[in-house]
Length: 433
Figure (tube, rainbow, N blue to C red):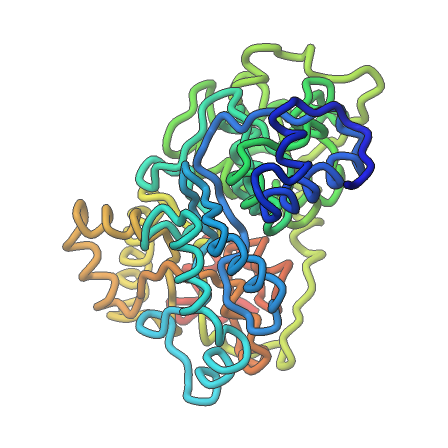
C-alpha cells in the first residue's frame, strides 16, 4: 500500500486497503496522492452529489482514459449523484464543415466520441442533454448551494460556483473530477479552506461606465493570476442583488479571469455571497491593489494579438457564447442582431454566426421565443451547443477568419476578439479594421 501523510477515516482506509475492490482502491490512491502534494490533512465529503466533468471529447489518443473508463464499468463504479459534462466538440448541422474538415474531426480528432459517450452513460452521465460548460444555470439543474463541497472540473464552472454561488471547489483536472464524484470525497486544501478564500488583491474599479465583462475579467486574470481578488466598485453598476443580468456578467468575467489567468475565486463587494457576509474582513493584510480605469481596460484590449495569417481578412465565422450563453443573453443577442441588420438594411448577417448555449437552455429558448428562434435562422444565425474551443482545435480551420466576443476562445485559439458592439458591426458588413 502507498505511504501517505493525511489522516483518513476508517471507511477511507478500507477503500485504500482494497476492501471495496482494486478499482476503488486505485481511485482513492490517486486522490490521496493528489492531496498529499498540496499538504491536505484529510478528505472531506462531497455535499453536492452531482459532479461536472471537463473531458467531454473522444480524442483517440486518450487511450488511458478509455481503459480507465472500461475498468470503472467492469467493476460497477458509478457516480450515484450523476454528473454533467463540458460541451460536445461537434455539431455538423449548426456549425458546418467542409468534407476535409469533417474527415479530420471524425477520424483523427474526435474519432472515439460515440464510444466514449456510451462509457459516460454507464458511469453516471445525468442525461443526453447534460453537455454544457454552464451546468449551473437553472435550466440545466446542476446548481450547488452556498457552502457545498464539489468534485468539479472546468475552470469557468469552478470559478462561477466558488464566486457567485459560494460553493467550494478546487480547479481539478480530468478524471479527478469523476473519482471524487464516485467516491464522494475530495482532499481538503486550496479553495476548500476558509483561509485560502481570503483576498490577496484589491481591484479598484474606476471606470466611467460598466466595463465589458470579458475585458475586465481578462485584466484581472492577467494581473492576479491564481490569487483571489476582491473587486470594489463593480456593485455601482451591478447593484447588490444577484439576478439574470448580473449572473451572466459574472459568468463571462469569471471565465476570462480563469482563462487569461488562473482565478478560481473572486469576490465582488456588496454582491457575491461571501463578500456580502464578511465584507472587507475577507481582505488579507498586505493585499496588493490594482486600479482599473477606462485607459487600463483599453490598454488590455489593444494588447490582444491578431493571429490571423491574413491580418485584414473579412470575418468568415463568428462564435458568440464561450462559456455558453444564458437564456437572457441569447434573447438579447437576437434583439441586437435584428436591430443591427435593420440599421444596415440587410436581411442576413454577412458571415456565419453561431450562438452557443446549453441544450436545455436552447430548448427553453425555443419554448419561450419560438418566433425569435425562427428569425435567427432567417437572419443566417444558428444556435448550437458545441464547444467552440473544440471546433477550433482542427488545424484546417486555422486559416479561417473567426471572430468572437469570448476572451477564453481568443486565448485558446487563433480567433480574434472584439467587443460586443464591434461584433454587431462586423456581422452586419462593416469593415472596422
